[in-house]
Image (cartoon, rainbow, N blue to C red; front, side):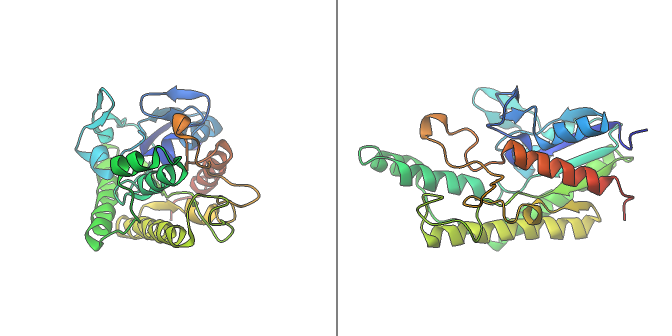
Length: 263
């Protein structure tokens, strides 16, 4: 008998999987091969995938999320009360992590005719988080865990953090359109985000699967990257987000983790 029969997934694009075929829901940037889908398939479980690209901890908990012309209710409202496993991947958008990388990348790769207008529109800047941002992201993650437990008391709750985008092998101006200073700034935010997950897990005694550690050696510039490069602006979807192989690796790690008894 499979250990889990009803899985629910909450989170942002590093869970939903934009740019990975086949597409499950184009509006919210959700793939049918994201890690929640692959996890459910491995266990033969029913899946309620509520993940939405661009989600924050606030749009999971309280605030409706606007995606183009669609208004999406807070994800927490859709989780099934009979869920026995709930995964959570969120917080990156609270810190402006991938949004900063995308803005910087789009402007850096624009041609001389469009760079000025792109810069004025996007206003890219080096990411620099504040202590308040970090505290709010951690508090948001911790509250999601508590809300899940209140609404689905039988569920095992697993925080799954973000695969790394940049690493020691990432070459400035070669693997990414960034200089060394920009790479360092983005890696700092990635480290802060990983700490947010660790602290939220410690506060709530939730399980933690550290995709940030799992993906070391699979960043852009490595021989086997688990994240997609920056694509041209006319097909930007999926840029700087997990590949299908990355999602498979995360699904396998989560499955292996939850196949052992909770500590």
